[in-house]
Image 1 (tube, helix red, strand yellow):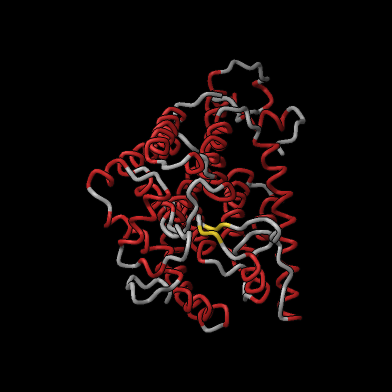
Image 2 (cartoon, rainbow, N blue to C red; image 1 turned 90 degrees about the vertical axis):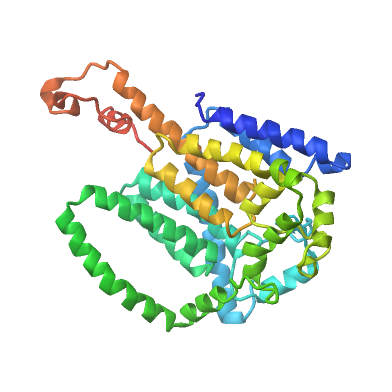
Length: 391
């Protein structure tokens, strides 16, 4: 199914490739994981991917990771260390920063937070968030509620800032959906209840060990360069590279690893970058690598993906926007690509459901179905009437 939003994405991909070829200083620099992921994403947009097959394998992989995550947690609580889920004989790169695998493995086994088969808890959380959204807003049956509860428990247990940010977006969309179904009087009552209960609940949580860990992580979000914390590196550091770029470079981007390294050496916080360290969040990757022009092209893609999408697709886009400001997810398969593919599949489903309104299907108007009220039933209700399973 060809959708209109594919054109803005194609324009961005063409711009990305041309910019990479123009700025690259070697053949190796032209063929990097990010450009391969761009083409993988474009290829997925052009195949007839079934939401049913996608969800089936997505759930299976999620279950394996969640089970291993809780095994790691039990091991750490009982023995003080955990099994590392990463294949340590392979090279490890996080946010374009090459890591010492031996040292990383030792630190991770003793680290206070588990991450299943992912390199860090944030990646584990980013993987589960789109699945939670689809189950909650799209599948939305009795079994999916129990699955959503499992995902939420795993996300909260990960103690990841990405998980909390994603859950906040999901909660916001869920409240908006409830408000559309309730009248003003009921909404007012619930608003008063939440206004009283939320401060009490938050204060009680912050008094626990889990709450203390959250507060400690919040203190890391210090914009001062003198405080070289994880929060500073994730949220603020990339803007110092942007400040070193010329007006022309800010406009068209600087899609070259070697050229960006040159800017890093000149910036005020160069001492925070390790060897081959190019870690920056997704938004900073957009404006630095593809400039204002490339960022605008991708923004047009997001706007076209948002239009006429359902609530699940829009929630995935909202999570992507929030995580773009705090995580290095630039065309990474397990988070950015997964979020956008989920939004894409939801858009296909929304368009497919809308197109049913123009079909002429013989129904018996005397059986009390939706056609007797002047409109056709949805695609999924039609499947149920004919004895077919939705998932």
